[in-house]
Image 1 (cartoon, rainbow, N blue to C red):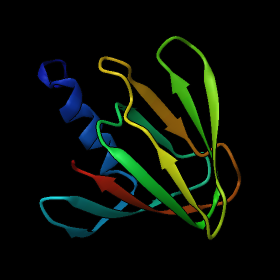
Image 2: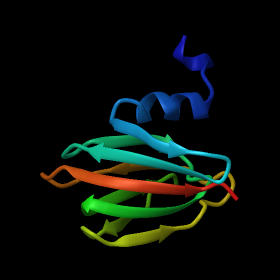
Image 3: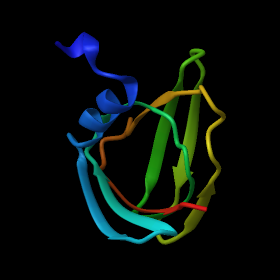
Image 4: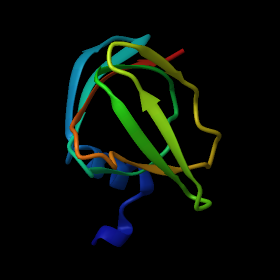
Length: 111
């Protein structure tokens, strides 16, 4: 049955495995608290909204790009990091490759 699910549905199912708590949402922004356990992977997805990410307990997320590249994105504790929209059709996975938990606040800008 899984073969009939669309990519966004599969990504959402994989996102729900991590600690993903909606903190606030309106027509302009969505604020999410995310906890990534050590070595936890976020499934294939595309960041379709601009984001400001604040590391409550920061660290590095390794982006596993569809073309095979690995790109480390650092989220320092107590600092805000801007993340742009991913290009249309470009997907990636993410992994907390460390032995430490990461806790992030993600503010997604809807417009």
